[in-house]
Length: 276
Image (tube, rainbow, N blue to C red; front, side, top):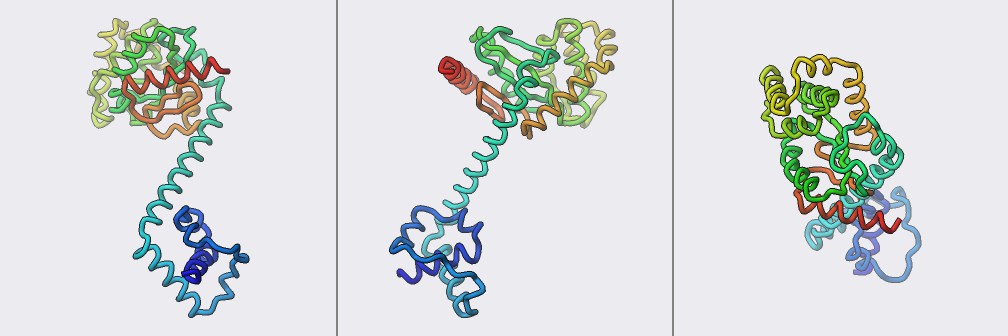
């Protein structure tokens, strides 16, 4: 047993260091426990017969005796990858702090002086954004101390871009929040039928009380296109890969959120802010 464990340890580091890092678990380490061994010899020092023996031990250990080692190793690798990605995103968010929280061109809802800021990247055609919208609306109605920043992130085709252009153009008429809410309830074709989607946008605009002629004119402004370009660039810089993505306090929350989840995240951010 001691020989097998020793050979297995040598094989992991000599044959595949990357695999070893991913799959060495407490159980595997315990199996190889014993007196501290010298560093494993280079793979070139093994004879073909020795290499075959080592490979046979590895195969038997991983596929017959302890197949759970592979699953545990892959879970560890996935967790490490997620942690590294989260740390990378948080670092990028810290560097983009002013663009996230202090961009005067970004529409703001809720309480502009709230003690917790929520930033959302969204797409009007995204079903997960629409699923989260009721929760967001409920949060802003119940918690009057939340500052909510809207970041247009139209990534689902031409109809998404058209809707974002219209939404930002509505700022000129001081109707952004009303129009945003109407667009989140609108039914789009996921850009399969742009003419119908445009009609849906203007239908929502009428429901929000907008002057359609002025809206169409303002949609063509460079100011609107510049804001969208800046939001997309910001999202790319901080690692937004899909919508919705929420930034609450120092934490990121990709994907749809229910009211209880949003409320808890805000409460945690508020408590963390008291300790700073």
